[in-house]
Amino acid sequence: MSMLPVLLAAVFVAAPAAATSRENDLAAVLRARVHDGRVDYASLKHHRTDLDAWLVWAASVPQKRFDEWPRARRLALLINVYNATTLRLVIDHYPIASIRKVGAFWDLKGPWRLPVVRLFGRTITLDELEQGVIRPQYAQPRVHFALVCAAKGCPPLRGEPYIGTRLDAQLDDQARAFLSQNGKNRADAKNRTAHLSPIFKWYMADFGGSRKSVLRFVKKWLPVEEDWGVSWTDYDWSLNEDKR
Image (cartoon, rainbow, N blue to C red; front, side, top):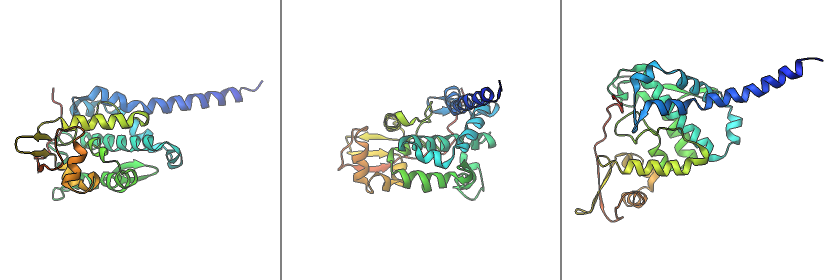
């Protein structure tokens, strides 16, 4: 009896298992290297195999298969690609004091204009991924609490990947975590003022287009009123590094 059918069966059984293993590598990276929203970049730089393997896996997902996934699963992958690529960009240049030290010194958006994102057989920039794909195609304002640009002013990096079946709950939890960081967002009832991260100013259009709509959006997680004043807190661009 020919062994060919048996060998082919073994190949097709092994392939999904290997893919699943690579798909799960990001969970191992985040679990081991992220602590309270900060990243142990020094350790990650020396133990980067799982991160690199996951990015290779993500780049191998065909556009056609991706398009067949549920919307939440697609968005979860894109958020993970953004965050994982940012981690790799930092460790490729580590040690650095800020991600803005990457790229041309005169261009404050330099890191986000580098062709570092591999997806669907092409290479794009982080800026193209966020501004050209995630924001216009998914119109989900809570994504700004999930995309982490490696700065302390960013929302905390989640210690697990985003997963389609749990994405809504994860984004809500990210909103709660970010808006509870008193140095970035706080409610001043005495002066009827909401002190908010400039993220809400930069992406105000995604939160309704006005300060009032921003207040309406955040009041689910922060005790503010829609007729309050708004001031913007300082944004810390230093590296979101865990040095424990």
